[in-house]
Length: 151
Length: 402
Image (cartoon, rainbow over all chains, first blue to last red):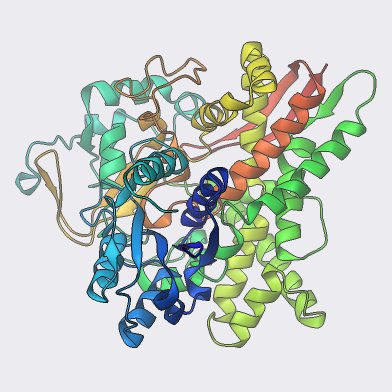
């Protein structure tokens, strides 16, 4: 299996911190990985990836944040064949909004429509809950790694 | 008042929070406690609605229909100086302006700027003589934050203190019915900071190309992503207010440490509690006691329909001592439940503080440096606090470190 692709899309940089936390945790388990900002990642490369972890916040009225939006647009436009890709998804949001974690739902849905297979539950951090995004993300990752064979 | 449902709007309601009373301005906490207990939502005789409880502020201040500019516009309010900035714009324009600098203020990016703050603090500590005295507000609060922003912007370091005075002048005019004199001083404060912003932009245009934040924003303006006015107001805020709240926060934290030596010791010895201690200092420092928003659509709170065009005053200073969330709110307690988030201190909703990450990182860097070298802190003389009904800040704090 090739390296796990960790892709983050963000507005204020919190999803980038989650990506780094997840990368550190994978490192600790000896799992090969690469971290990329979504806006710097060519969507065609996903056709040759085995496993990817997508992390995105939600912005404004449930919109995709600054660096997720162009990546998502590229997916929709290029329509890469993602049938060989398995992926997991983690979102950062705020439960007090009706559009709580809408962006990760939109992104996961698009990836699925392109043939990718989502594994595990979509992780969701609630900024209004008080738990740090690192703790939530690492708890979610542990569950994911317990449930899914990635190596 | 029938359209509003069950809310009192009487002359008496104006007395619940006596905005211009000097004692209220100095220590509004007993008044806040009373409205939290008895009047979680009330209407002033001028039609302003006041919301104070934590969960209400957390919920309703985020409502996307609220805006920061009154329906009649800013008029000749001194704060019209920031009408073309992230503070007073909404929607796509707000996002467009904010995105020209937000990538430089992410939690990861600010680590580099915080290293500069730590260096400035270390240099200040190196200058302490045998008596252990230091002007802490200026040297540990203001200057590290100002230098951190100088690094990010790519400009020369400068004395940050004049900007504290100027920003305090502007903040006082945000208070309730400011006097003519307060308005004049606010214009002076904005004038000073705008002049400095223009100077920095002109100097950078004369000597471009370092690829730092100011250079990048000028390029964005030259490419049409920002107007000149948006650029100038953004730089006025980034540079002019870089150290204002951070300076107050660090000063307030040092007073907290002086009054709670066990917190100083815990911070020094146990890195795992530092973030929680920092959060408690932020809750207690609260530089902006309230925020005003304006409805653009009917908004229902507790069964009361607030009409479009109304002002809602969210009392952050009350919310952060709501006893349902913060037990014994006057105590310095860093072991509060994680749900008792101090996140409100940085505002909520669209206009939450874009500088939160850099403020937290520089404060952490400075407190780390102080606690690394010293065992205790004591306040010498009286701190010089600057209060209005709206804001709380510092203009002087001397401490002895030992």
